Length: 279
Image 1 (cartoon, rainbow, N blue to C red):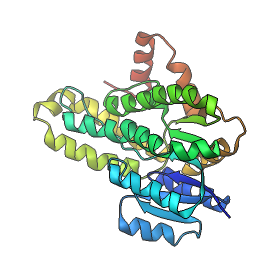
Image 2 (image 1 turned 90 degrees about the vertical axis):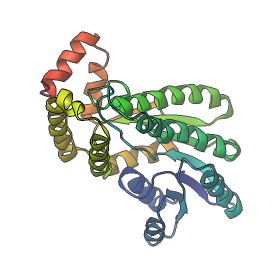
Image 3 (image 1 turned 30 degrees about the horizontal axis):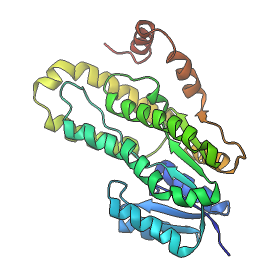
Image 4 (image 1 turned 180 degrees about the horizontal axis):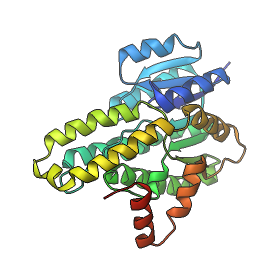
């Protein structure tokens, strides 16, 4: 008998891990995409319904192999959760272009590639696609331009995809939220240090004061972020809903920022500067 299955990218930690566990405990067979063998073995031991697959979303062969695993297992794919992502930051004046390309490759190009690969299966099940966005896609702030741009792009692509797939009964939803307590903060700090090392000395001369203010804000966001479980609960709701919402705005901070994003640019800039205590 075929089981209802979901494919989750970026499942090793944080939001992806929370989604994977909740879906498995809720009766789904979960094909959990991870990049490291150690993570594959760990996830495999956490629940009998979790089937980890080595999946670097930038690698076409990995995507093809994951889909082939699904086909061979005979499970019914009812959901794709495009969760894998990274956060690149820094002053755009000195940002290495390769870092910007990598930001878009993982956060924008990869979800489209994953979607294209599984759509033949989702057509059969009239399944669901859930893209993990961010409220940062509605409003950028200093130093998070690359991340905000990638989330704005995936929001636009999600809107287009939702309309294209509606005649086939495939629901497409975008999740938008503010800070969440996940390892992405630690990874971001490591990436920041690498970026700073790759920038010329004048970068910190120009932007050092601003950078310190941004770091203070992100440290506070890390402490106050919501639980990944909240995001996982919303993913489950989107997969189960007869008519899933087009967008799920999650949390009080995100809802406030949706309003701020609609303000005139000059007013919005002044408000961001004051709230973030920027120089």
